[in-house]
Length: 232
Image (tube, rainbow, N blue to C red):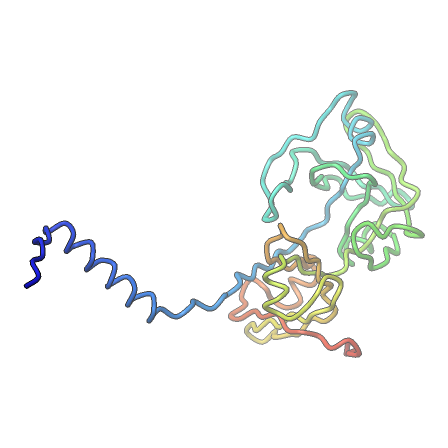
């Protein structure tokens, strides 16, 4: 005859909880990863070096963050500059974005470059060699850029997990399908910028955003672009 000690209520509840959790875990299905896609319409703006910030706004001046951008660590600054093109054509108040960079550059939409009388090439950020220049005017000084005026090529920021989800790598090209009332379009050649820290975000300029009626879009999706695909 085997004698067993009575089990107290606390022990019984513990055993029951363990059984319930094990059963729930065995039946639980993994939740599929669903990236949150954000499309940002990027208006004309300027990136500055530390040296040019001081030239334009005074010795020792630092950019003053006004509004955080979607990507962590980036912001729209309080500061603006006048951008002057040939024959004194100008854009009077162009927003400066921070933080500062190794090279100053001006990013415009196509209509902006027409207004300034500058034939700005479509380039990815930082690819400035051979691009036209302009004059920047601030409250405390003037900077003449020999090069650095571009039309920013459309692109998509994403982290490594997003890249795995879409089956792409850093430097690949993608398509953006935008469904809008009477204005549905597919934009090709969005360059993938993938790194561990970025959030999933497409950058378009104001001309592109207006062309596809982005404010009224009912559906937006990213699609892989085959390496040999060519724009229509």
